[in-house]
Image (cartoon, rainbow over all chains, first blue to last red; front, side, top):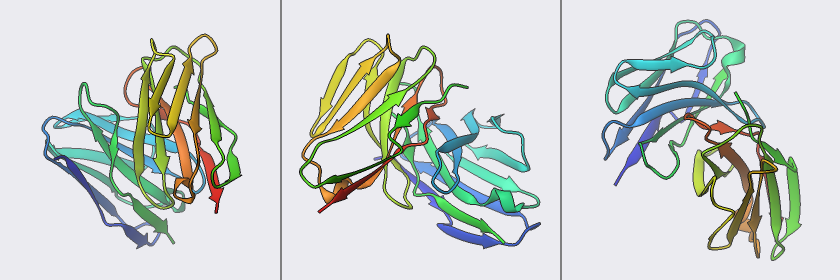
Length: 112
Length: 109
């Protein structure tokens, strides 16, 4: 069966520090991968998506970046965090013909 | 990009009552999906309705779609305390999905 792993679950980082969030999918190949951010009490904002290794599309210009070094691995990074980067980060995947997205359990990032 | 908008923003009902949430969107879609999010967790896919469908059922869930009005509704019948969560609609004009801000449902036992 397919599973999605996202870590860490919670993270407290100082302003200006780097960030690396990892997401991996098991049990499937060639997934579409997505990073969303959810501010407190708000909807989901699409940050990046990828349809294949090394293929990254950015929806919102900001100090975050994403990479897909392997087929089932999606990494969200920042060189210097801002206070406004705080939020709940969600990774998701789907495939052509699949029945909706499968989400990870999320990472709660607090920048202090 | 277009965004689904859920209404109401918050809904509080007694256990056993029905809960209805609405979603409106702006442009043509391929399908519309509903998701549930328990507090502090990831979203869980509930149901997908295609643009050529008008109604779909799954257990206690009933979804309707009116493409002429660009709107959808999610009905949860005989609600339970465990249904307490935020519910999001997501539209698929082309991938990726665009989510609304959600309806926060509280079911009081």
